[in-house]
Image 1 (tube, rainbow, N blue to C red):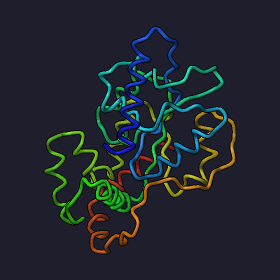
Image 2 (cartoon, one colour):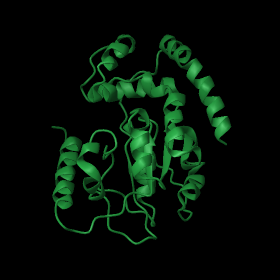
Image 3 (cartoon, rainbow, N blue to C red):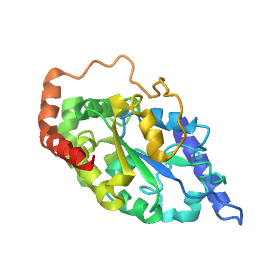
Length: 257
């Protein structure tokens, strides 16, 4: 078991133990970072976790609204600190943006919470996702073959396959954001492009109702070392595949301003 997976398992078991005891539990979170994967969510998580008016959940990627919804609200609340009203808490699970079951679940349990979605050039995101899967040992195919295999891999609906091999599907942001806008309301979902994360950090804090803080400059991510850049032919193939969704995204974001 990888170290990060082991940490998540330990964290989950501790939260479960806390949830079954008659102890004070934390309030539900005031906001969520909902994704997307490989779009800067780790950086944003760390920026917000360091804010003096924020105490984060027990760790990143609780995956309650996606993978662990059946464990119930008490289990979820056990991951959040007991805190005064002036202190906010949150979690960041990049799969939330993509999993179609999540928006309605989150909106029902967190009717006043706010949500932040990060989006990145979808071709670059797809290639970064592929390199991530290769680094974790779950992908053995060359990138072009992995793109060809994606529809069949995702057809089963298996969560593991959807998380690991959704290189193109996760880059169709318009359809994902539409689900969130419909469930939570456009005024409670802030969409930020990855390259604007630092320049829009003050606006993110204002959206969340947090006091101003100097914008961080560090980038936190797991990068694949020594990987070649995205091949031009594959870049053209991906750009063509994403063209319709990018057009829809432009209209969607223009309408949401």
